[in-house]
Image 1: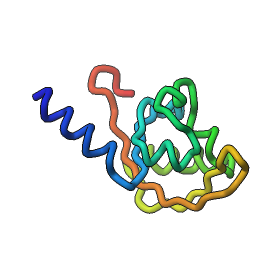
Image 2: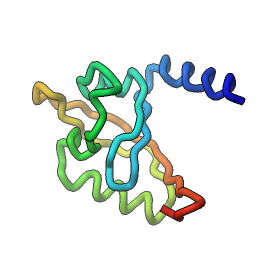
Image 3: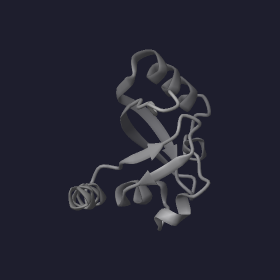
Image 4: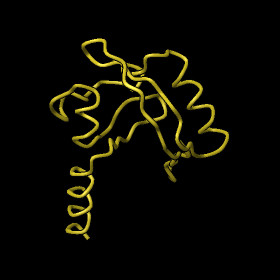
Length: 106
């Protein structure tokens, strides 16, 4: 129901863990407040047009992550380095899964 979806969104927004949704090309579609804080952004609107690549310290890290996702369908506890807007490096553990659109297969 719509109320259940709103409750879930509210829960995710208040988690301390950074949560995001991105397309395979890296375009960020949505994220919670913890992700914004991790990346140094202030508002969800600041994500519009941003790509995950914008935050990876190692340019090849995202490519390797996507190759693993394509092959295994998920990645667990991948250590990554993100770079903040002030240039500081942050070590993070990333866990994710690949979900394809049933209509397009993408």
